[in-house]
Image (cartoon, rainbow, N blue to C red; front, side, top):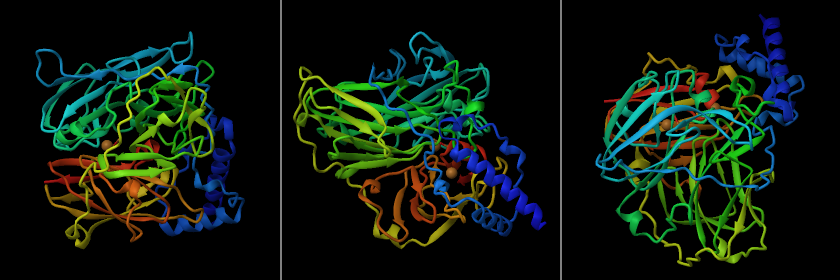
Length: 509
Ligand code: C2O
Ligand code: CU
Ligand code: CU
């Protein structure tokens, strides 16, 4: 047995070294991870294996698995595309039609790339809804495969949530009716069919949902779509030699990443803005890549929202990190700059994500950002609640698990009562190599972070959340309440981890 473990360990370390050191060609790693079956290995064996791995050549700092493949700089040659706004059809009160379809998109000049999209060939619209509105989402599947329509961050009954149980077959249409029951926020939607979520998102299925409420409409925040209020959907891709998105070729079991950034589907994007305050709704729609956003000048910007709503006061920052699934809204004050300033949004390693062009002719609204945006708080009652659900995240590659279990559609992992707040404690257990950050997401709710390792969360996370970046070794306490009934997924939002079984189900009744 010992020798078997050693061999497995060496095999795995070879795979990891291969994956990490592959650099620019990481996406072409063709090692078949599925042949390495660790599924029935005990935790003790895993630790022993990790020990073997550490004693081989593992201490080279690669093990964080954070973005091993660098992103190319944006040249800024293309003005950023904006998703179309989707309002209800004329004469059809509050019916929004959303069709998943197959298409071709000219991402590179003169080349058609095969893509998927909602109501178009690539990505999707911004669905605009208001708190309190009764809406019908008329979903249609015009793909040649099964899909689901999942509304990430939406407070919605389980039957409409679009998890793996709510599949829509090719040619089928399904109406989802619900009342918008949450405050102003930038949410998103994407498919969630078992076994094909990661691939369908990678091929282009993702759209946005904007919720507005009575307060958000009166707050003097930049809100002119495409003028001073822009969505930015960040997705990295690996294009093959024919400029196609070959998911199988790009696939990495610990998260598929690519060297090419698309923002709203635009390659080499730039954004033209006026000398005014501009609101950017940052959406990490990538399969696995994290982004730490900062300005090339090192200047401050202000965060105004988390995943599920506005924060109480604008939060001054010089950088903010989003893991897959997370959103944040920020405001950059461009009135300080002029046409000659070279302003750009960079990531943590200095790659240029989005250069800005300042058009001094463009409107210049100099209004101040309101100082009171919301009344979010973690109550004393919530702080006093005992932990009633414990989750332990562990593993990597094919071995990722929650509480040592991998996803089973026929197993309900937890139950919870509708309308009752419970404290979920989520622990990301380190392995001998450190471990990975897992973006942990719960469907059908917006929750509050009560503490991180016993401490108050940073200001950037004091607001409604549906996805949180849990670093190796960290423990989060969350106050979680479901307003509706049904079966909801919770999972790691590295989509390959989700596919590999780092997902469970809570039934609310
Ligand atoms: Cu973006 Cu299961 O979710
Ligand atoms: Cu979700
Ligand atoms: Cu994960």
